[in-house]
Length: 377
Image (tube, rainbow, N blue to C red):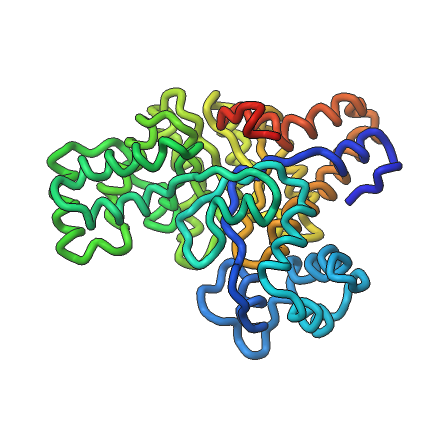
C-alpha cells in the first residue's frame, strides 16, 4: 500500500474506504495445502498437476508479498514457510485477520456459490456491512423445483429474494456466452423450455430460452444486473464472452444498470460500452487479483475510455480470506502507480486524481446500488 506520508494522493488511496461491489464468501472450514493452492488458480477446474504450484503465479507471488506480513512473516516469505504459518490459524481466525485489513466498509455478496461464509457471516467476520446480490441461475434452479408454472415461480422467488438484495447477477458467460439471441422469449417458449429442463432434472441451467427469460426479468426488476465478462474457469467459453456481443441486449436494457465484471481480456471493449451507454458500468474484480504485479497496467487500461463515474471496485474474492484483502491491496497499489504517474507527468492535477479515487472506491457503487448513509457506515 502506498505510504501514508508520501503525498495527499498516496494518503487518500491508503485510507479511502472501499465498497466491494462483487464478492463471494470466504472459507469457514479447514482444508489442506492442495485446496489452498487450487484456490489461487481460477481457470483450472481440476486439482493442479503434481508438478505445479498455485504459489508459482502472479497471484501466488502477490500472496507471499502482501499477505505474509499480516501473518508475522517477512515479505516474500517462501511458499513452504507461508503455508506452515497459515496452518497455525483457523479459517475463521484468518478471516478476522484479513477481511478488516481490506478497508472495505460494505460487501455486495453473490450468494450463488456454496461452502463459504454467507452475507451475515461475512459482515460479522469483517466488522463491516454486507448485502446480497441474487444469482439468476440459482433462482431458476429453485423455480424448477417449485410446483406449478415455472415463470410464475421464477418471478415470485426473484421478487422475494430481491426485496432485501441490492442487485442481481448472471453467469450467462458460463452457460453459452453472449453471442446469439438475447431477446425476451415468449410465454409459450418459456413454458416449453421449462418443461424440458424439469424433465431432465432441473439441475444446471444451460437452456438459452430460460437464460434469456431470467435476464429480462432482472431488467424488469430494475436493480443493477451484474454480468460476468471474460476471464473465468474453463467452463467459460472465453471467445464468446466479449461484451461487444451484448450490444443488441444493451440497446434494449432501458435504464437498468448493467455492471460488467472483471472484463479481462476485454477491458477495452467494456470501457467503450461504458462510454456508449448511460447504464453500463465496469470493474476489474477478479482480474486484478490474478494479474498481481501486472495489475497496474490493467487498471490503466480500465481508465482509458470508460468515464470515471462508470468504474467501480470489486475483488470477486472467493475461498481464501487472503483474496478479500489482496484485491483491495492490489487495487490501492495499482491505482496509486497509475495516477501518481499521471500527476507526475503533468497530465492530471493531484486534486483531480484524489477525486477519481473517491468515485471509483465507493461513490459510484453507493450511487448505483442506492446505498444510503446508514448502509455505508
